Each structure stands twice: as structure tokens, then as C-alpha cells.
Amino acid sequence: MAWSLTQTATGSRGRGNTLEVTFSSAVAQGDLIVVLAANGSGAPGTTMSDAYGNTYYQAAQALAANLTVEIWWAVAIGYGSGFYVIYSPGEFSSQAGTIMDAASIGNYQTDGFSGQTGSGTNLTSNPFTTTGTDLLVGIGGSGTNGQTWTMEGGLTNLFSTPGAGSVAQASGYSINVPAGSQSIAMQDSVSGAWACVGAAFSSEPPPIATATYWNYQKPIERRLTWAQRDRFV
Image (cartoon, rainbow, N blue to C red; front, side, top):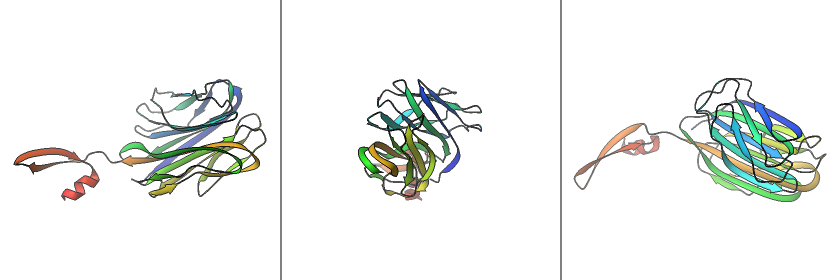
């Protein structure tokens, strides 16, 4: 199903325990909230929360020296104005993050993800295969000050920080990506150790019809998705 990107917000800080990022407009009920986050600790223990108590799920995470990059998501069961997300790394560290408010029709789910670490000036995640019309997101970077990352491979840049007082990272997205092999690619200004993650989100339509069919002379009723319904029509 087709996606629309409603709004984004970004934030970064020097060393601390949490980073809070707030949307400028109200979030609608049922929207998909995606968080692209990085911190300079290289520690895996991270928590995510928001102003309305929604539950966040980790889609992908990768760790390098002095760097953690990760993608989280939630469905906005709680919604409204003043919607902020609090990113809490496992250690006292520098942080940067982007939050995205996106919408489609149906039930949101991850449709492939990847994480990768390496070194050099070119960053590419392991490829992963998607099956629907997806929202594709990625984030990567390094734990070295002074490095500047830019998104490549057709992804639109969302937010980048050069690692001066924050963490060297860049995040990006592409919307309504057709099914196929996906990867996240980035370019760095200085060679060094890096980590990146990518994830895709699809929207499966909810059941919309009830069909009755016969199985060994016994009627069976079941709920159908759009695709299943078309096979009966």
C-alpha cells in the first residue's frame, strides 16, 4: 500500500543520558513512528519511549567502536500534539536522532532489515529483500569526530551531524520503494570504522470481507485480506 510521510524532526546533543526530539505538529492515531538513532557509546542497551506511552520495537542495530546505530518503530496508539520521543542509550554518551511520522493503510510490519560494520570511506549494508511497496530507512556513521557522512543510493538525506559535539552520523529514507533487493549506502569524508543499519516497513491491509466456502460439505467462514478477496471475486 502507498505511503505518505507526514513530518520529521531531528535533534542531537553532546554527552548526556537522554535525547528528546519533538514533532512540530500533532501525530494522528495509527501513524507509524520510526526512530533513527545513533550514540557514541558502542553499547547495546537502549530504550525508547514517547509522550503518549506507545510501545517501541527495535528493527535493527549495529555496533562499532564508540558507536551504536539503530532503528526503532511504534504504532501511534497514543497520539496528539506535543508528541516527543525520548532516546535513552545504555551509557552516558553523545547522541543524534531523527523521528519520522508516516502513514499508510493497514497493519504495519517490518519487511526486511540489515546491519553491517566495516572500515573505509564507503559504507554499504548487507542487502535484504522486500516484498511490498515500502518505506525504506537507514542510518550509519562512525565514532570519530570530524567525519561527515552523506547518504547515497537514491535515499533522501534526513539529518547528518559531523561528530563535533555529537556523533558522526547520517540518516535517510526513500518512500514507496518497490519490492526487490535493498541496501543502504553512504560516503564518508575520512576513512575509519563505521556501522550502519537499514530497514523497510510495509503495510498489510486489514481483513475487509467475509467469505463462506465449502469443505467436505461443511460451510467454513473466514476473514479475507484484499489480496485473498480478489481470488474469490
